[in-house]
Amino acid sequence: MSGGIVLNELGFNILDLLELQFLENIMGRKVNETKALAENKKLVLLKEKLEKIGSDLNSLNKSYDDLKHKQKKMEDSVATQSGKIKKNEEMLFSGTITSSKELVNYQDEIKILKASSDEIENKILEIMIVIDDKIKEVKEVEDKKKEIEIQITELKENIKARIKVIKDSLKGLEKKRKIVISKIPKEYIEKYKVLKNKKGGIAIGVLRDGFCDVCNMKMPSMETEKMKDLDKLYKCSLCGRMLIVDRDEVDIIKSQIDS
Image 1 (tube, rainbow, N blue to C red):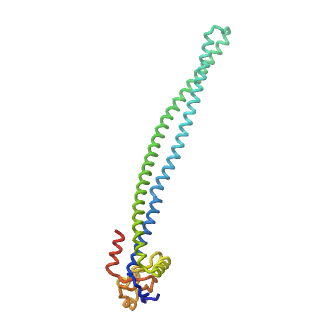
Image 2 (image 1 turned 90 degrees about the vertical axis):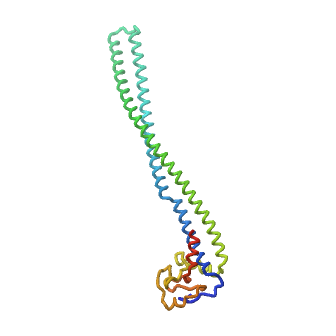
């Protein structure tokens, strides 16, 4: 094909080629839209946030478990010491102690055990306060986690619904595409595909006021003067794409596909 030269006596409506391009372009945009929805940035951020909160919650629960374990050990220690105190007190009042030294030893041991138990019980109270605070903190984080999980679920459902709408639309567009392709001779479909691959997905331009609407360059007037026939297919001498002469039907076809 050379600039301004008619390609062929076509024998088909050249607007079908343009309609094919419009259809495939919008189908490509819809496919990209489904990919973008599947990789939704807000969803990715929410998942990252959920993962972070999950990690924080695990740390809090571990800290809570450690505190409860420490409390249990202290309570066991107090129980053990209480048993010893009770046993020593029973010995004091058993009447079996005959030595004053032995008596003093039992009394001193009871004092030490009681002092130790009091100290441990104070620590248990301190730990219980920390545990209460930890429970509140865990509850707050759990509530945040549930809130994000709800947001993720709602967003996923919304994305799923939008993708379904797009896929349903694509099915309709694919039916139209097949009908349009059936109207175009195979040789022109092949030319269209070759140009489409070479020219960034756009094989056909429209000549408007001497300009190719794809490369947006003004063609030499000597060439455009020869491009008057609405039923013929031309070539842009600047970008190499196929060209058709502008007419009202171009915008009508585009609007019908976009609607």
